[in-house]
Image (tube, rainbow, N blue to C red):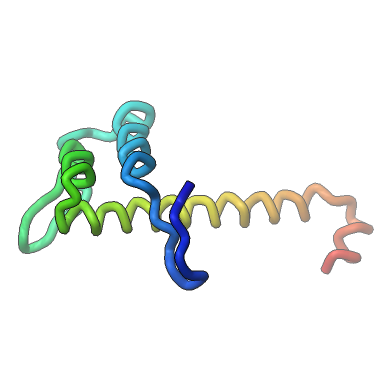
Length: 100
């Protein structure tokens, strides 16, 4: 379960959850391990390097944990929003006007 400290902060995933998410990208979604996850003037981080950074808690690993946590939160918010729209669309027309 994500850690949550403040209503305005993004709940961070645990290291195990973040690593599980990266493994899912690599194994289920078949993301190219040589693909670039992030690049900056300091260097490039490839998908195959994510788990190592997270496990070793490098400065990049800390940022990656935040980015993966934020990505999951955004995905969940989108899915909930879509479900809400689908619920409204699945209501008979007379019920729709009552819920507006």
